[in-house]
Length: 139
Image 1 (tube, rainbow, N blue to C red):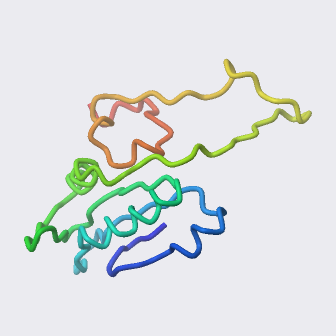
Image 2: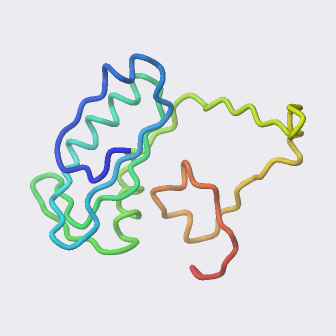
């Protein structure tokens, strides 16, 4: 997790080990937030793509800089704009070996399958999200 993402970071040497399965990135989200720059996020995303590692740009943070313009974003707009950036990318699948109490594989029909509501379609976290709980708060 690269958050708050307030400067350029390279993890290429760590990605090369094959031990990192996914990387999440998000800007600062509270008062006095420092800027997160598009170029920093894209460089990190490109490193992940080169190593076939899932990269999720969760949110821009409150202050996001792209093409020389500074954007001030609140609430869910941070996640929506991160998703619209197109920077999130799915890498190789994570191998899950889920078993029951006796160590036997759990049949596919018994596994949880996420459900996504309308608002979920604009969320930057959807690529790795467990889906909607059906609480009804989002409408």
